[in-house]
Length: 490
Image 1 (cartoon, one colour):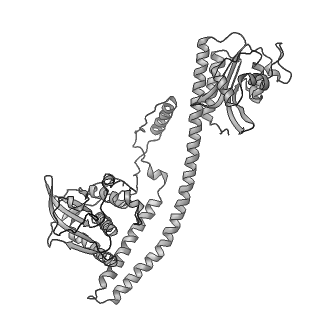
Image 2: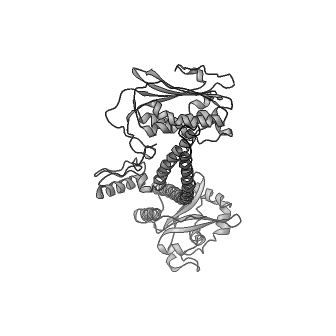
C-alpha cells in the first residue's frame, strides 16, 4: 500500500526532476511510487511528480508504451523491476506495453501534450535493500544520453530511493509516536482514576488508626501497631502528593529549555539533518528563553528536588522502620535481630530520603527470607578508604543472589532469577536506594553470600549452603557538608 508522501519528499522529487529537465535537457520525467493492490493484480505505479505536469494524469502503461517504440530494455535495474512485477522483460514489453505506430505521432489514446518525438529514454527502479519502491522515467528527443549523464541519472535515482525510505520511516515513526501518545493518554486517565479512588480508603485507614490510638492506653502493647498505621498512612499521603505532581508532567516539563543565546546540540550526519539543525539553531537564536525549566518539579527528592543534608542520628531515623519490621516479621514467622549503639554521632543525611532507602532494603530482606529464617540489622562505625563513617548493615538468611545477577543489581526493573518466583517486586528498590545514597555522599554495597562481607557482625549469622543469605551495607561519612547537595533526576 502506498503511504502518503510528505511535502519535503515532494520538494526533493521536484528538485531532482528539475535537474533532469533543466540540467540534462529531458523532455519527459516522471517519478512513480509503487502501490501494492493485491497478490493477483500485481503492482501499480502511481505518479507523484512529473514534467510536464500533464503527465501526472497519464497511466503508467501509457507512458511506458510511448517509450516502448524503441526496444531499449537493457537496464539491469529494469529487469529487477520486471521481476518484482512477476513478469519477464519481454513479457513486460509485449503484453503490458503495446508499441506505438512507426510514425512520429503518438497513438490516438494519448493526450495532445504527448505529441513529441522521444528517441532516448532511461528507466530506473527506486530500489533500497532489494525492495522496489518506485520508478524513475526520463527521456529526451534531441540527442542520446552519454555515459556521464546516465551515471548522473542513476545517482538521482539513488537519491530518490534513499529519500523515499527516510520519508516512509519518518511517517511510520510518527504513526508509532501517535499510537504511543494515545496509549499514554489512556494510561494517564486510568492512573488518575485509580489515584482518585485510592485517596478514600487511605483517608479512612488513617482515621481508623487515629481512633484506635485514642482508645489505647499509653502502656498498651498494641499502641505501637496503631502508631505505625498512622505513620505509614502519613507516608502514603506524602508519596501520593508526589504521584500527583509526576503524573501531571507534560512534554514541556520533560525537556530542558535553552538559556539565552544557547543553541541546541545536534550531530547532523546528512544534508537533511544539517538543514534541520540550522533551522533549529535559527529558531533558538530568534526566541531565546529567559530561564530554563527543570526536568522535574522541585517538590521532593523522588521528583528531582534538592536533598537537605542535615545532622541526624541514624538510630532515630531507623527506629520507626524497625517497629514496622517487627510486626511484619511476626506475621511472616521470621526472627528479627537488631543491634543499635546507645550513642551515635549525627550524620549528614536527608531524613526522608534515608527513610526510603532503609525501607526498601529492610523490605527486601523480609521479603526474600523464608519462614523461620532470620533478618539482622545493626549500625557500626566503619572506615571507608581514608574516611571514618557509620554503616547500616542489613543481612538475611535467604537464598542469596546468583553470581550472574550481581552485576545487574542496581539496574532499574532488573529482577534476575527472582522474576521467575511468586515473590512480588518491580526491581526498583535497589536502584532507588543507590541513587539516594549517592546523593547523600554515601555508598551502598551488596554481598552474597552474606559471609563475604568485610563488615564485622555482632551476631553469628546462621547461613547454610542452601540459604547463603545476602548482606547490604549503607555507609555515610561522619564529616558534615557545608551546604545542601543537588539531587539529580532518578
